[in-house]
Image 1 (cartoon, helix red, strand yellow):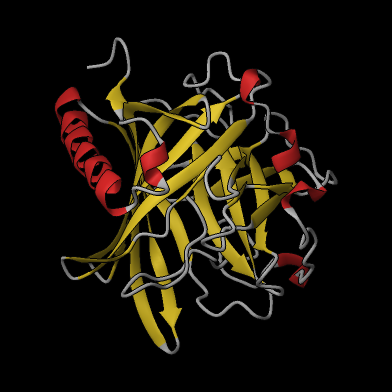
Image 2 (spheres, one colour):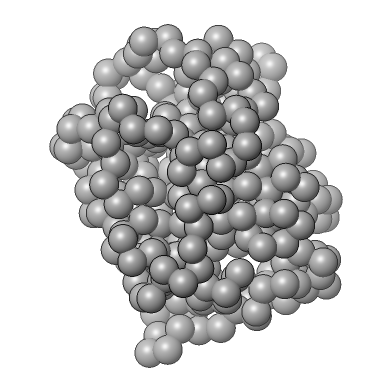
Length: 302
């Protein structure tokens, strides 16, 4: 799940953190640092991307971000648009579809982002794992909605218009290590970075209680004084998202409320939705998304 900002009725994903994993309170430490606000190659990022280092790229078994086809996470919470409290729901499904992006075969994930019960954004997100176990984010094709109308498609794709893949999750995160670029999409303002914040945490969410949780801190160089904390349980993935910093306006909280492995029938339904959006992407975003190969079902899937 990526950082978002309010579009139409869509609330942001720079989210609220409670001081204890299972309770309420203020963000720990009150951090406001804005490290990594220069070019994407300052730390781990564009300069480290090597498309020849992705042998088994669609087998994403990173302990903190496992992307197994058919897995679906559902997060719920709230955010604020000014004084208005907005109900939030985000559904992410790992499909059994793949594409080739910037010379690498990637896994296609599908995000549905709801605010107050209305779909605000449907997004195709693209990931691959390198030989060292790091998961890379290769870009995305989002469709932002106002009612049933697509009003915006701010796509960025690695290798197109100066964009480059970035790291979605390191293989062995360690506190105190440099921040890293999560991708670089200059034409749409994608410049998020992340760093390992804590390890060994314990957290409870509606789905379960988890130990040995990793916490990452995400921020944008263009939004100093605001950041996001994401909690990752081993072999599960993201289970909570929170916010921090004096300049954070949306103050959103999301927690994992459901985690399932879809049936073949349910996965096939999602696949058809994604394939329809994939086809639209070639018409709406032909100069960006059109540089990817059409999505196709992975060998042996289905």
